[in-house]
Image (cartoon, rainbow, N blue to C red; front, side):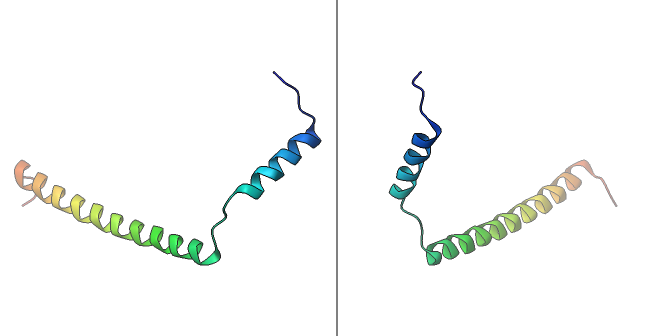
Length: 65
């Protein structure tokens, strides 16, 4: 395995980070909002699915009144 000096390593890391296409502030905000919206939609979906399954299981097993 080739040995690299810490200075050379940091130079290579810096060179690689300059090649990265960084998102703009607007793109970051849009994707952040999209994540929050999808989390809300998914949580509502699982809340409804859980309630439906609870009602079905209660009905099938005859639990409750």
